[in-house]
Length: 171
Image (spheres, rainbow, N blue to C red):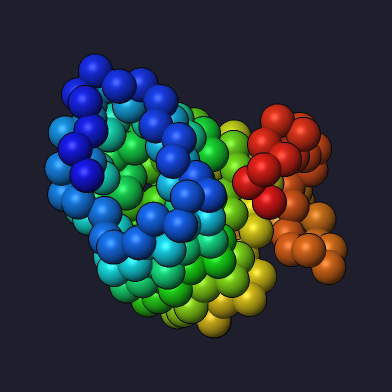
């Protein structure tokens, strides 16, 4: 997939695309929104995704993506919404996830993540929505988040949950 380097929004959701994400995606340095949700994409998320330093919205939900998240995911410092639910991601979350200082919504439900939640997740002070259900995590949330957690049948949410209305298509 060739992506113009001047592109700021790429929404190819719900198209039944298959195959893998090209490493070329990381060359789209001006990209702010990447929505490839509800396709049939498989394979690993390329580490070149860390080159999308202006990215604010990453929606890759409902695909067949697998493997660990790239360790350089923390390079996406402008990211506000990360939706990776309903894939086959596995292994522990990289500790660099705590570098996503602008992150407001994190949707990781229905994957195969495992191991301990990194303590760095407690550094996500702008986080409003957190969905981790139906994974294989073996630890609780860091105590630094404990006073703000609301647990319900659909997952754990941080209160208040303003971004749920802003991003109804994410959950």
